[in-house]
Image (cartoon, rainbow, N blue to C red; front, side, top):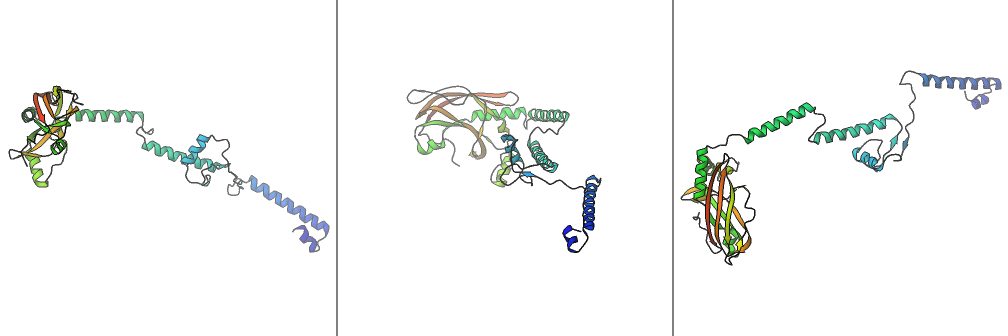
Length: 299
């Protein structure tokens, strides 16, 4: 009973003192009992103290913490780090950082969760796969390859570029084209769909060309240099064309020169090559004027 209330009710002063002493003793015993209790439910939690500060944390680390953690009571909306004295805030920080690290590890190409033995096994498997693909048998025979190169070499055409055919102005490039008949499979696909899908598995996709030597001059007797012609390159796939009533695939490349011309004369020595060291060399005479018409048959 409070002291003031006891006095109001007329309790003697001696009784009031006794009641006050009993109340204090009881309160003290209760506090000791709660503090020494082994039951965690009875333990009085320490108050959580939030200090709105970033003192003691390097700026770079504080920035990293702000970027990694995007939610949680320990981080305010302004991006400042709110340090907590209890272990719950530290756990939240470690958990958020762990999530970010795990996400980055999953994205990386060299994940740390893979054992070294597994990494080595994966590398060996990929090397074997690429080696098998590189040494896979081509989808044609040697006789078919030689027949194709012979046909391509016998049907080379020197043509003005599309822009020159239209404008008929001095140019610095022309086209070198050749062709071959479509296979029955490709021809049936064209008749069925109206076009042919480029799957890079046609026999002509394996043909490369290389300019071995050349000598070209323009109408001013200036020597012309070919740009990027010394390296082996694949033949480009041009539009389908009809030759002698047969639908054919056109292959070739653009010959780019360092100076313009109205008429170019000379020669180009060209070498076609296919896997297996199957080659065919041809010397092509050049005599082209910008006023020349397209030599191909009309479609």
